[in-house]
Length: 215
Image (cartoon, rainbow, N blue to C red; front, side, top):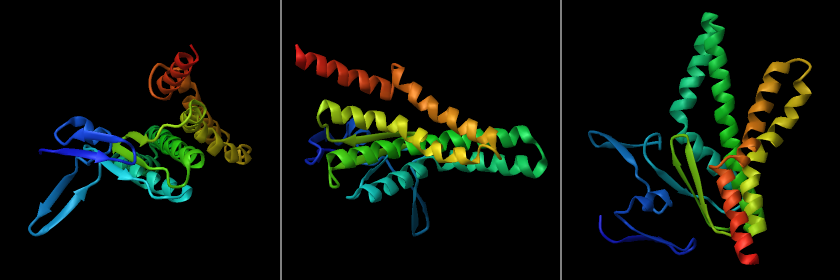
């Protein structure tokens, strides 16, 4: 494909043949399945799907949840199936794997929604953003703001699962193990801020930029 893809709102322009065009959400590397005259678009399980987020905080959160959830569809179905089969057959080990996997993927979904909500609250209800999904991998292509605002957007992702887990503690007396599991998984996202990848890398990059401007 010749030519360029561009998004003036986000200040992006890439060659149509460049892999970065899909990575930055300028296009979707979609897969269509055709049977006769009918065609179905396959969710972004193995390909890259880009979705511009609608205006508004709540609408953007729902759209990001649906789009990323679609990318995770195969994993969610597999883990849900493992849970059902494990319970039906009494194989508790399989059921435990299903529960742990669903909790982990659910926390990742909440994590990404946290980034979206913080971005819209700080940058405006109509601030442009594109969610790029490929399976269980997700990237929010957005405008950059001040160092402080960008740091809040980065940190909001890992904090979101912790906030979501807090109300579950009212169930601790009757279901202590599931509540502890969800809480430990949520805290794992916060620990990720000190790792040299993902949100941890983004946070250190922001700190480096701020230090360079101060010199």
